[in-house]
Image (cartoon, rainbow, N blue to C red; front, side, top):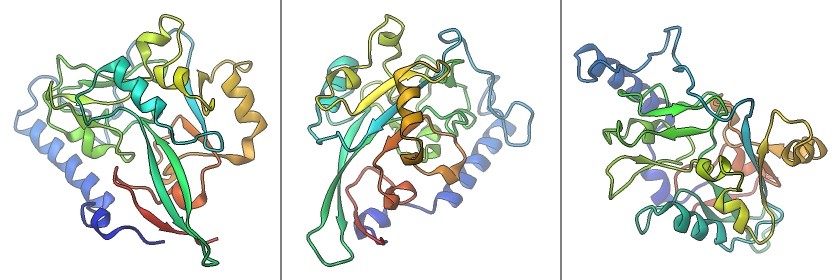
Length: 260
């Protein structure tokens, strides 16, 4: 598997980057740069800070059926209209990938929806020196923009490249599963606007929810991105090619060589 040279050159080794960030946070808390709201550090009992109150008894997740995604970007547009990120910055998008075929035939085009994975063990939470990034009891990961100082630690810690520093607010920004809509009994903008019905969101604690039923029916085909990171992502994919499970980095389009 090979990737576009420009893309690869901009990506530092994941392990060394993570180690550097953790060491940097530890140093900042030691010398008092983080103030009274210190980040929980590896090895402590509260490495993942206590979750804040969410929707009682629920655990939200999203299922993306790539067989139904046509790459129309309706989800990207509707998310931008709903959440108003700066022009040119997106909380979710559908990236286009070109996969070389081993038999020499024409490359296949793959549309891959990308967004925050609202992990059960989110690496973005413990690295925040002021605990502006937090997780709710219903699994949704959010950012307190009044507390965020825009240091970018969480942006670097996310293995899914799902975060960015908002150009206007100078604070961390990302997909929130449109929690304000969920709390009002509505679907996230991206789910509601998907013309192919490729996105499904629901309560994973409810055995009768559509997402649970579909995951159960397609269990052998369910995959997540970068399972080896042990973040326990809660965005699940159907139809995700094996080459993408551990081989997708960054937001730039890459060229992958099919191995199977």
